[in-house]
Amino acid sequence: MAAQKSAQKSDPRAPSSTRRSEKSRRAIYDAALALVAEVGYPRTTIEGIAARAGVGKQTIYRWWSSKAEVLMEAFLDLGEQSAQAMGHEPYAIPDTGDLAADLKAVLRATVDELKDPRFEAPSRALAAEGVVNEQLGREFVTKLLEPSLQLYVERLRTAQEAGDMRPDIDPRIALELFVSPLAQRWLQYTGPISYEYTDTLVDYALHGLTPRTR
Amino acid sequence: MAAQKSAQKSDPRAPSSTRRSEKSRRAIYDAALALVAEVGYPRTTIEGIAARAGVGKQTIYRWWSSKAEVLMEAFLDLGEQSAQAMGHEPYAIPDTGDLAADLKAVLRATVDELKDPRFEAPSRALAAEGVVNEQLGREFVTKLLEPSLQLYVERLRTAQEAGDMRPDIDPRIALELFVSPLAQRWLQYTGPISYEYTDTLVDYALHGLTPRTR
Image (cartoon, rainbow over all chains, first blue to last red):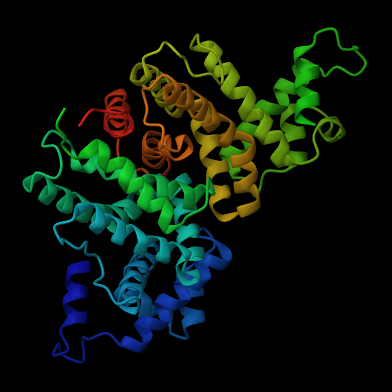
């Protein structure tokens, strides 16, 4: 379903009768993000999103089956917009051959995103619900978080192939050494977030991840 | 206030007219934790806690000024009970001279605590509220999380003095390399939690934290 919709979105020659109204789609995303930020996930409804977006609720039900689905796609779209506004590719990690520099660049972009007011309030509302609502939490991870984390896995595998990371390291765990501290500081207010901080995380983590002579 | 109450609690010779009824205190903690787990933080009230604990709400107001304060102390108490039940000191990190072993032991105990049903639901309710309620989130950190994290800071400083950790490392950031991944997996369901996992985190982190010859 998600793949089908992406295909429609990226193919301007799709029949106009089946092609989504870009304007309505954007209005629905904006309404969903604003509403969840204001009233929280439990009190966000398809009806409320429709009213705020100025569309009929059948318009929403035609394209999405639940408020969770609308929100997940609204976040994916927000990430794409945000990346484009900052002049880099959405959902990509650079590979310049310098692992530390590449990780630092991506984490600095994440710091910017976490501090973006458009992103912060709706993300917090969805994340908070995911903490107490296991089904939504797992859906959030599967659709939004894990695909981003897999980009790190791929970059770390390339680093392993290049001899920049020890071959016995599990990349899926390794990435958590720099991703999770940033996530926790943001989610739980356990400390300030800055470029200097994320650079430090990468340096600390890589000194344990890069092979060295003894 | 918290210090004063702790002093009362730990001094059995305090005048009985001012000493808290241990039975009421325990009933109030149990009620607060059960209620927040069932209805969430926003709908938990002093009145609801009092009714469930079978005490008058004035009994609660005599000892605590807010529901947040009751809950924070209920969690501190739960942590102490949990540690005692598992046969180790509450709020302490061992110092056997083997940094890796000490960190692994504490993180394994944390894994047990995170999987303890008495702990899980109320902790999730409070953590979720902290994500969207910055004031509560920061209070949660100041009273519950940061004091625990400072125990790691102290253990890592000792390790630095013993030459087991590089002197240029900031211990407050270093601890996040193994604490935050566990926290994120638990909070956000980003992956399974096990002793093997936390042992791996310590090994990965320490290879970057321990001094080595080049």
